[in-house]
Length: 370
Ligand code: OSB
Ligand code: MG
Image (cartoon, rainbow, N blue to C red):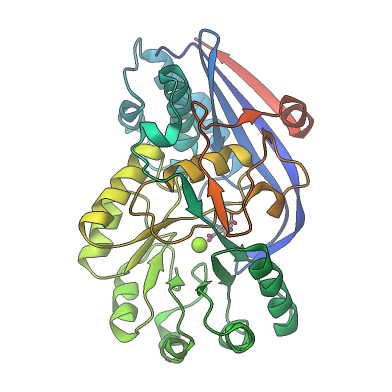
């Protein structure tokens, strides 16, 4: 492959409902879609970055800048890209900015798989025909509202219920769900809202039988997480703390977690996501795919990566209709009544782009040529 043209599009899409986490409430989603061209062949990617730097340090503006001024010029310097697993290396000189890197790397994977005439899942070594799907539920105002929401998603077939928590909206909310629905597969995600001072609360939470608690402590910590993991039964899952296979290796060595959430954007692309999947597999650490309220393009990548065999826990790969009135892919991502999404058989990410919808949501476009 030889990359001769790249298009960046900034999109803005309204969420069907506000989504609340311990770092705020979101009503719409701004993000970037990448198009990478070799001749008339095109690959698509999604930069899952947010408009604010509250989940990680990147924003839509920083990602645009890093792609425009550094990453795209690096791609244009290469006369030949034999395989997308090289792309990671071209970007090495830029420290972090993983979501920016991932947006271009992903588009090159899509382009490569299309050229091979194979689905992306098959190209990366995926082994599943369908994947089990969980749902991530934002912080609700009352226990009653949470119980009602959980009931709705259980009825739809979701295979794992993840509930966002923050101080004051935690153990009682979770207990209400347990009391109402019994032995359902449920977990909590704290998005770093606690410290080791809350250790007694986490000890009490052991009685809830959660399948895991995600990122309870600081986003940049693996030491305190190891102390907490040693003190509680509930497995800790790391999200924000893991940016690379090296981070994963260190967290595993320290016993900072028993499970890892892999987000392709957070770790800088598919190649690194596969590396983390593999080191976790060698160490008997199950993984699952996290979500960033993606559009259908980002969602398609998440579905493909989840076809790798150590993704043994349902991920946050909800179908398009959970968040969007209309998605930017055709068909939209659909889940059956058993909470399964089928892998597409078409080449690349396997879904067509809904050009009319893509245009309608685009608020800014820039074209770069070699
Ligand atoms: O921590 O997993 C998270 C959404 C935005 C930022 C961080 C997270 C989330 C989610 C939603 O939990 C996952 C999804 O359904 O896309
Ligand atoms: Mg999380």
